[in-house]
Length: 384
Length: 129
Image 1 (tube, helix red, strand yellow):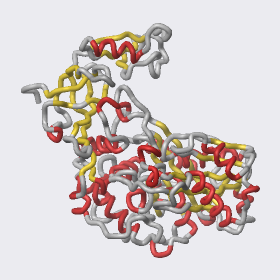
Image 2 (cartoon, helix red, strand yellow):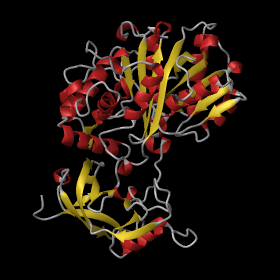
Image 3 (cartoon, each protein chain N blue to C red):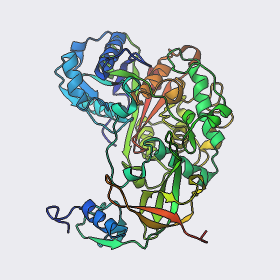
Image 4 (cartoon, one colour):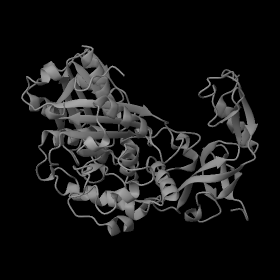
């Protein structure tokens, strides 16, 4: 028991900022504020109702402070945990604790990035590491590529199986009007694209676009009085295993193997109860690792599991129905958008790509170089 | 015990590199190899860290080839040293795509340049599997 209670809080607002390539001189905080207003509008709350701010961004070192200034909020509670792309799942867990304890009532989690406009090098400069930088890994890509090399060596996973992940994401993206990519993609196109860090071509790697998003959270009791259908937080789990890829104990096993079971235990659910998965797909290897570590297939079977369209539209397990970081949007730290799609699926507002009877959805975030792993399980009122 | 007013872990590592030595530490409380060098041993929290010199023999644990624009392909690998620690490096004198997991390798000190002190790289061990 960690003290967090299944269903104690709900997401009552979820929105993206403008995505893709925004106007010159747009700031990451402009995007956070835009998404926050859109998310507040969904539930009828105002900026003045927000008393908790949770935020992290590579371009804004003091994100909660900067957003509070922008919106002129004096938050009672704030958290700027920065663990890469999964920061926002971690924020959600911390917001749940804060709301349960009465430290705040209405929390916003916000993110923004202009990495396409200003370049990745400018948006996310890397720290010099004397034990890695001399070898010039193309980080983070080369770290994930080495994890893929290990998975291929140990389990016979193939480049074609990795490509299946990108192709499935593209099929979903074609059903999402907000997705960046608009054209179909084949396995051959993935394999024959420009090689970036073997075994990954550019099509095994996430998009580099501008964007952001926001979630509004409040207690389950207050959520009932608001106009948006509440999506309850049933379970959360957080785990860290390392910071640099040289120090990851086993490149084929991620800390999702700890965060997942924690979230399932809190939710009193098992993997087969989940109707839809939103898995952080920075690279094609990551959904394969997370399907294994979250209990959807045995260790080593992920490549074979995704083959033949298992996670694509019409397959038996819908994964990344937005089109994911590979084809919909990846503004640097993608975890917030991973949760937005899961929330929308539970609400039932995904139109053509809606998963039927989606009362339970799982959002899994990854940060750094497979370093931080955080899992959130969302449910409808029926799932409570 | 490391006195950070006198020596830093990285500074000592660099001194060994300049002498052509790949140095690592051992926590003498539980005899565990430690790399990257630290002021305090991980897990045990012990201050009892001793410097050792690696024999420089190891095995490729993971590998990739980076394709920077307008440059030849570049190997980046994780090497498991026989003494029981892992480090990032690269395997030289071989087509980067021919660097395979499980390959036996031996350390060689790269001289560095005006920006970087000498740093360890690896070459394939002749005749080894």
